[in-house]
Amino acid sequence: DLLLCSWMVDRYLYSIDVKVQKALDCPCVADLKTGPCGNGFIDAFSCFLRSTEVEKGSDCVQPFIALQNCIKENPAAFSKEILEEEEKDEEAEKSNLKVRAPAWSRESKPKL
Image (cartoon, rainbow, N blue to C red; front, side, top):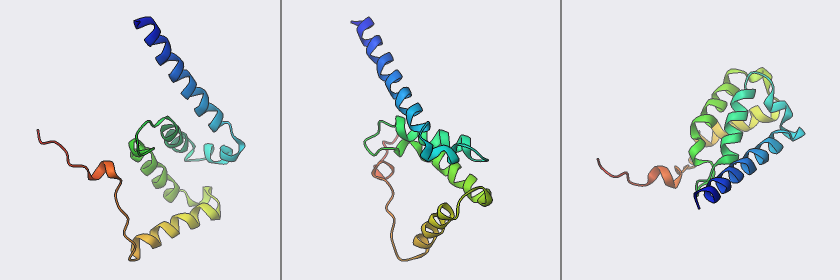
């Protein structure tokens, strides 16, 4: 049983790694993998693809914050469309729109 379980875990992890690699090989993300934020993009995107949380990617907040900070620090490296999306996000923050934190961050934590 232990050998079968180990084999299943290895196969699952291999399967995930193959899916992540195929996604990263897509020409649609080629430009994002290069440049000053390439490693940050790969980390955040890979984390999201590997996420098994109910709220997909909720365990990847830090890599995405790091990527967003890198994009803000290196605006010349990104297309106008990406930077416009960042501006729209900032405008939404300043408007009356309310953004709710993900459910996992609002759940009460047990007291130690």
